[in-house]
Image (cartoon, rainbow, N blue to C red):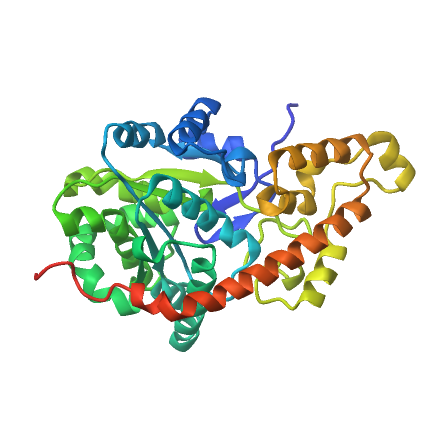
Length: 382
């Protein structure tokens, strides 16, 4: 008998099991993010790549090459990403926004952020007050990564509906219920708000093109779990007269306890480093985090550890190793047994604490301008 492959589930509403990312890429039909594409990005940006690209966190894409072709010929693009506010952000949520900030700076392009307070009301059973409150709290954390206020725009769905709805109704006309049901597996009990939500999530992908009356390409960095939403978006783009959005897909940051991906909902709190965790709680979570180490010090010195399954190594990978050389050295020392798990955790803690201090200060600094970036009116008379 052949080796049985471990089963996993990856959808916009559930991530479960140990993910085989290459197998998932093939299942979704996406393209590999090759070294040649990464070299092109580095060359155009005139800068070393950020951790998300340099360390393989982003590994898959749709039509990135075509987007870069257009950019090099003088056609600018815009960025789009978002957040469904169901609770506090955790450290892995910032991975996609940190990449977006880097691209915004290096390519000098606009950024559109969507806060989907409506979707979490429909999907998670939260109250309207909760989704609105968490929407604003999440927005402050997202903007804290350093976006340019003049090039950054926000859709806060329940407050931006007048701006989104004229475009969303055109989009909704192109999406049959059978498509939404097939892509997301919605049972008959699904409320119609959640069915319509795909049209609202699609709207920012086309909004600048609609607003300016010309084709403006879109790039969406996101977790690969969000790809099904944008497969629908891409399928209807040409029928609406807009370019298909390009996508960059990231792996999910694993949970601290080795249980699936780090997630706001559906997992134990100790599996997640929330941005609003007090520092003593952060320290406790790191001390008890799952590693790829061996049963004894002697065994680890002799045989080495397995960084790829280690939640601490995954955190170093995201941002806490300040250079790629530092990350390579740490990985080699882990694999050889020269670095023990306790020492690795001890070295990580000061970096995490400094990150929390910077992030919280930056979060307070964006409060004065965050709401001024929320789009509330259509771009032109209807």
